[in-house]
Length: 324
Ligand code: F6P
Image (cartoon, rainbow, N blue to C red; front, side):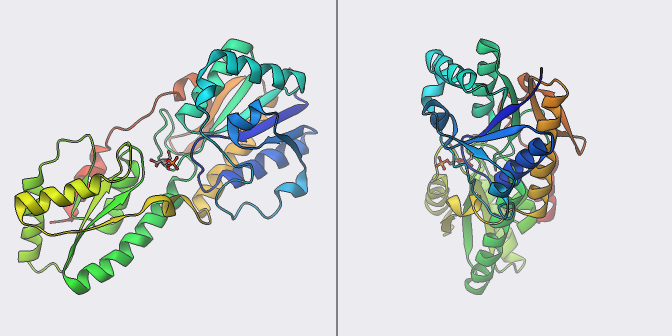
């Protein structure tokens, strides 16, 4: 199929690096005489017909900025087939040959349905700080979010040591273990706890007490956010009530999702954006750009519809081995 006009949107939670991906898509497309339209505010904006043409200079000076110039939304309406039919009609009326969706597994499911139900050509670019999409080693925004969290925990460590305190620091990830364990290793955390895990609080408490006895001046427990923030307060209560271990809580929240993307996020986003467009030109119609064995490649979108939230046993082992 001849590709003359494409559209791009961001959907779900934003992530640093999305702007670099948009820039890459626009510049690669224009380099191949393809017109690009940006859709504001995700699938909600698509339904409202909120399109604007993107030219070369509209994406100048954006790759170093977090957030997304297209803005984003979580559009629950898009779960309804009749709503997707409306969106597909609109894309067809505007003579859009393909839609590129930057987002997480939910956004990919929406794109897959547009393809299956209405024959819209779609390419997914994994964009979420959670790094929790099946069949890709990387999602745009993860490295920056980890860096933001590590910077924060390093600061907490300073004050924790000065006061000889234990801190429970809650990181984002909506049930995904990736941020929690990576931050745990990178900050020398004494423990990492997740919502669904069968946590052994006696073990956590005795690890901390053992550290204090051998002269540690601070302890950090990283807690991975559950469905909603706040799990840390339950951990704090249990440690205090059942193990007489006082701890302070710091919930990092959305500070992790903002700020200038790291070089890794800029690089991954630039590669994925480029491949999304060249893939379309080579005939991809329902694919995603993914990282496998360290390389950015295309795979069938169908492979990337599931949330992956299994704990990496190697990182788990590493936290334990290094925090003695
Ligand atoms: O999915 C990305 C993410 O940042 C999760 O880590 C977090 O749980 C969630 O989004 C927060 O969503 P919202 O910004 O809608 O509160």
